[in-house]
Length: 252
Ligand SMILES: NC(=O)c1ccc[n+]([C@@H]2O[C@H](COP(=O)([O-])OP(=O)(O)OC[C@H]3O[C@@H](n4cnc5c(N)ncnc54)[C@H](O)[C@@H]3O)[C@@H](O)[C@H]2O)c1
Image (cartoon, rainbow, N blue to C red):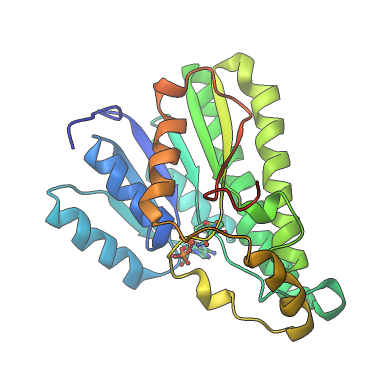
């Protein structure tokens, strides 16, 4: 890959051990980025390291649970004070398609913690240095579930809608400081998210499934990574607060 949009630029990527996060790490590395990647799944990170190595690239890959503040602190400390050019909040989990009446606090708390609170904490940690530098980009990976109630359970839908609110707040409040924040809303993507995507509520799943039939096709992770990379690059210098759907037309 000859495009070197990220040469010498620092990227922090969550969910680096699988799916869209892994594809984002591989793409940004190929474009010259200095990468700190993290994931709760150590084996996933090892797989990412092997893929990077095969391409002749590397990255600092840290095992971390982004719902734990001490782990977030450790990941941010690995930056050694360097301002982040791109924070890609990719890590996420599904919610077993649970509707509110079947939802327990444990699933709600975990889904909100991973999908919404953790991205907020990472933004809170890296934006001060971005402001000082006068530049920086955040890309939050939401979902078509952030745009509609018809594809996931209540917790995922709420968290992903919330992530769009977080993005808009960042864009408006920090745009004058040279910081851009945008959201990507993928439709179905071939990844490992299925671990939390089996149905625990059959009636809710049966109802949601009707909207699945409108989907066109599943995307590959790199089709989302390419969008994250573009939004984080200077090529998107006037794109701030955008909600970019990448669902092959599912929601159209
Ligand atoms: N795959 C899809 O169809 C799809 C559709 C729309 C949106 N998304 C979103 O894309 C993002 C990436 O998901 P994916 O599809 O690549 O799934 P994935 O399961 O392949 O990857 C998600 C990664 O996040 C990591 N993770 C989960 N909890 C974590 C935690 N507490 N701390 C650190 N890492 C953690 C997982 O270990 C995993 O490696 C998610 O935010 C997801 O909601 C996915």
